[in-house]
Length: 87
Image (cartoon, rainbow, N blue to C red; front, side, top):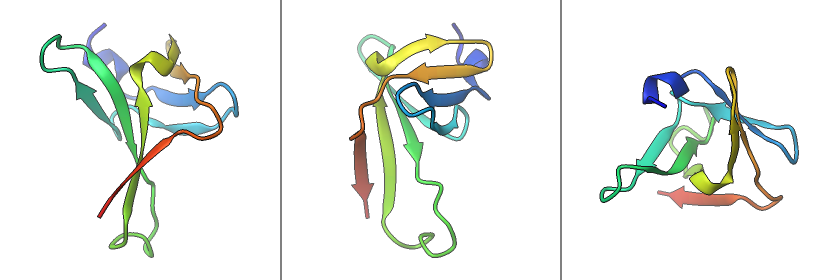
């Protein structure tokens, strides 16, 4: 599958049914040695009050991807997904 085929797909957590983001608004972490995607990084959709504050983003390991459909990517995340904070 090409990166262009992923762009625009919504990312949905199958445990909660929550829409986490859209590929294209996200970053992909690529393994330099293999060229494979190792994780999807979803930035916080902050508001005007968090614009200059701490930046949080959700890191979804590629292993959590369950299915890539025509319109969505289904991921399996537990109730405590990895959130990384950058200042």
